[in-house]
Structures are given as C-alpha cells and as structure tokens.
Length: 118
Image 1 (tube, rainbow, N blue to C red):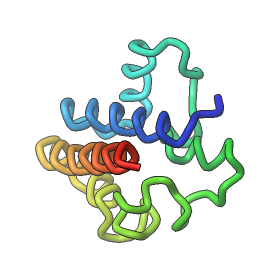
Image 2: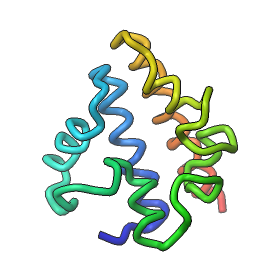
Image 3: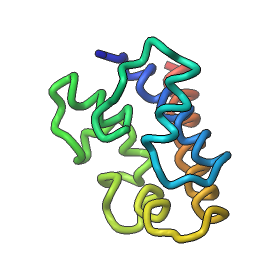
C-alpha cells in the first residue's frame, strides 16, 4: 500500500498513541489494533512501521537520515543510541515505555502540524 507522507506520519502517530496508552512493546500488536480500526490497511507493513513502509514503497533509502521521522529521531536514524525509539526499545517497565511512546507520538503530531502550516 503506497501511502502519502502525511498518511504515513498520521498512522505512525496513531500507532504510537496505542503504544503510549498500553505500554506495550510489540509494534505488531499495536498495528493489529490500528488495523481493526482501519481495515483497508494491509495485513502487514515493513517493520511494523509506517515510516519504514513509506521509505520502502517510495524507494527511499531505508533507516537513515532520509526517514520521514528524522526530526522525531533528533536528526538520526530511529535505532541510533539515545533516540526516543532507542530509549523506548530498551526500557524494561511499561510505565517508562509509555513515556517514550508518547514522546514519539507527540513528535509525529508536531510534524503533522508543521505540514499543515505549509
């Protein structure tokens, strides 16, 4: 499914909101919940990440500074040490995981607001 940049960021935000609410660590479970609300979404996406799916379907180099969420990742790749995603992935408690998932969702929300200004 080829998403627009805006759609990909919107779905990223919604998925991270689910993870912020649940404190879950499995993006696949969050994706399935999102898909129940949006049945037109494909059965799976690249890496259970809409930003990665966007890169993959638009033939952008995967997981480097061309990611549509580079600003959320503080100018780096998502899995670079110290990014919100890296912190989310490494924490052990649900409470702390919720905090970082919310930070990512908020970063996506900010990107959408910036797109609306243009």
